[in-house]
Length: 136
Image (cartoon, rainbow, N blue to C red; front, side, top):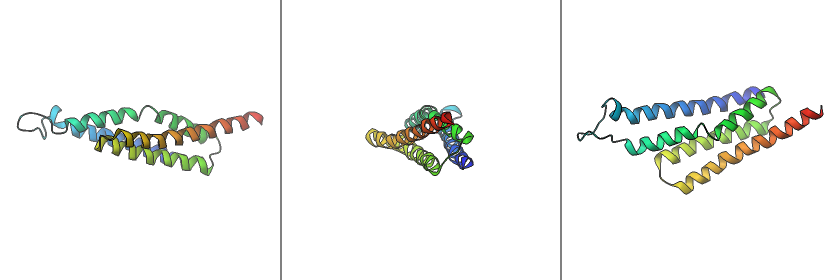
């Protein structure tokens, strides 16, 4: 089942790539003049800041997700690992939507907690698996 971890990892990479595309589109009026308002301003300036912040977030806590998945690609990954990986990815998608489309910091924090706990769960399983491997 370790190969089943490639899909959630690839899904997170795809989300990150999509955020780069969205950021490029949001910056188009400022960079290339495409879609600029008659007064010269960027109609996407507010959302551009939120997309940029969310994109930065993809390189913080998710790092621990990918490291845990790489560990389980080398060892036996059970169903719990795959489920936690998909919970993390679903949480990241929802977190991105909340951060980009709203200003609801409380909701964003709640959604982040799902991501946080999923990765924490993965790391509990890493420690348990590493402990078992050390006993063999």
